[in-house]
Image (cartoon, rainbow, N blue to C red; front, top):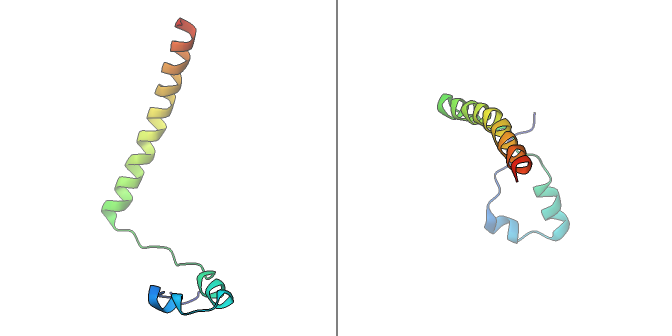
Length: 66
C-alpha cells in the first residue's frame, strides 16, 4: 500500500504539467469512517430502497390515471 500523498496547492502550482500529472495521478487511500457516518450511510441506502419503488408506483399510477 502506498503512503498517503499530501498535496499543497502552493506546491502543485510550481510543478510543470508532466510533474503535476504524475503527482495527481496517485490514488487517495480510503477514508476511515466513524460509526455515526456508517450508520447514516446505511440508513440512506435503506431510504432509497424504500423510496424508489414508491416513486415509480406513483409515477405509473399518474400515467394510467391521466
